Image (cartoon, rainbow, N blue to C red; front, side):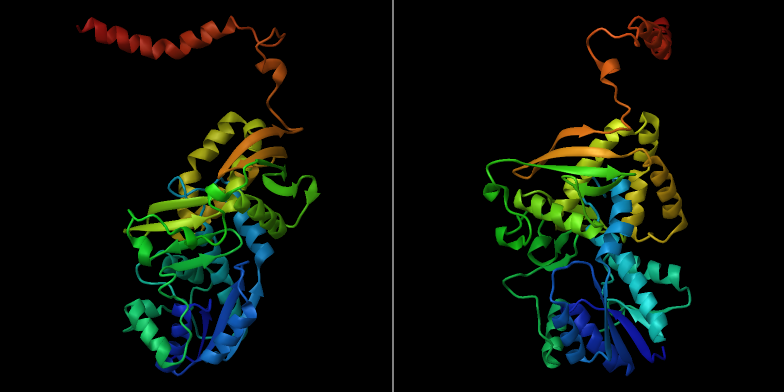
Length: 401
């Protein structure tokens, strides 16, 4: 391809730093380094300096923390999306926003192409590129891991040393990480043995449960239309609310997951995650739904969770099917409002209370004491009708004996 200018999704890590230099050497092109500030806790000024030192003609840093939480994380939490029973999709949900930012930057900078640092084995290549094509169908995409000669971490390190690029992966931390305001992930290196327990010093966010406080802590979260809006009565921006719950959850050892998951490309992969605030919000959301959502609406929505989670994991955030599902989910969230009280203790999130002005729960009907609404004798006909097909089936079986 004849390439004049590329917008690279740049993190400052080993892969994207090498890719930045490699693009310049391979295509003789100008490289704009694009970095989305997703609350990853890094010194982005240092990321900027490193990119310029490595050869970038320009560095674009977008502060998208509130957009990320409000328009990506919260819609996902409204759906109670969990992949394969454990993974709260912290990396998956960030990729479409990064890719969207890249495309916007490419249009502004009049670039010929976009590039990313995802390998040819993983999910991220799909997430990035499907988003690119969904938003700019004529875009040129460069995926170095699929075409270059640097086919191992060892080769990357050698290349980096040749061009004086600092190498962040060391023998002390032999695995790769991804972080944003919603989670931290760890994979590769010493984690590739699924029998091996993650080293205790690997985790950078949550306390081990052995060192978590010996006394529980309570937190109250207010909801409106399925979104958390306040903590203990204090309204916060989406990013600040999540950051506050991250601190609380991390202090009590909440949100660690060790999972062998099925990648979209077909192989199994082991990932270790920390999602403290997200774990708290997932439990809180389920609790407030329990008293505000109609039973059949909830069951319909729940039947779609697996599919919705797969769409995010596979990279189809900007697909018509995800958008249609989101409309249904959001319509079902209209009555989901009220307050949830949670108890955090030694890695656990326990529901301690829930209340709502839109509650469908009525203690006057649910009571074991005498009431004036529910006639218990009515249950006889209900049971007889629901048991009819089972009675008929058994009678037929007995007649054949």
